[in-house]
Amino acid sequence: MNKILVPVDFSDASSNALSYAIQLFGASSLEITILHIYGVKSSGALIMKNIDGILEKDAKQKMDELLKNVQKEYPDVVFKPKIIKNYAVSAIAAMGDRGNYDFIVMGTKGASGLKEVFMGSIAGGVVSKTSAPVIVVPANHAYRPLEKIVLAVSGSPFSDAKVIEPMRKIATLHQSKIKVLHIADKKTPQIEKALSAIEDLNPSVDYAFGTGNTNKDLNEYLKKDFSGLVCLIRTKKGFMDRLLNESVTLKQTFNSPVPLLILHD
Image 1 (tube, rainbow, N blue to C red):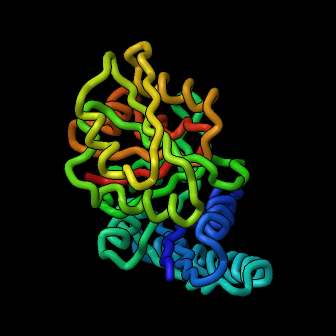
Image 2 (cartoon, one colour):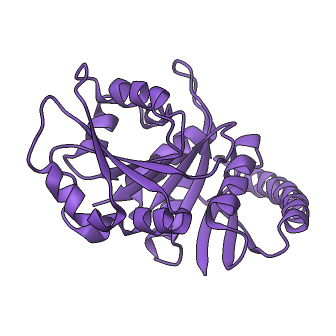
């Protein structure tokens, strides 16, 4: 049974991520923990208690409504609601680190300028702190059959083949074709390491020699290449790290037109 953690804030973006998770992993043999986190900062304990009570009551009402809708639409899925008071990023990351979930699936909204967007900033924070595989679903992204997965890598893809097992699991489930995308200044022999680890999946290779702006080059490639999912591997000095360093904030990484599967090495 696949066990998935889906944090929600009851927005359209998080509801869309929940629907995406169900369609991606299939309704049979699927358990989804729907997590809502609330919390406020206040200097007065009495004020905080009163506000927390209101927030918790409101969250329970919205969770009941959400459960009613999804259970009706997907009766074969096991849904486990969870409402807690905590800091969202640290709580979600910690739950992922305990190893009870195969994936965390989160929705994100597009950001413009310096505007802070809740689920966008939360998703970025979780990616940077958890060791669990995270799937980030862009707002308004409609699920489509996963015919192709792009594994975007740098010169040194990953340290061990086990790192990409979550991608292998999804690819096997959907019989997806794998394309290894190497964005770099020139071809490097290390790319063969990425191929050897997934040679049984018969991957193809594509090279993108771009502007030096990795974030821009990847997004431009994805606009031309109709893939269903992009897999990135986050290492201390790897491809994902370059993407983050080129962004003003973590949330700007998530301008991808397709969902991202982010793994950790």
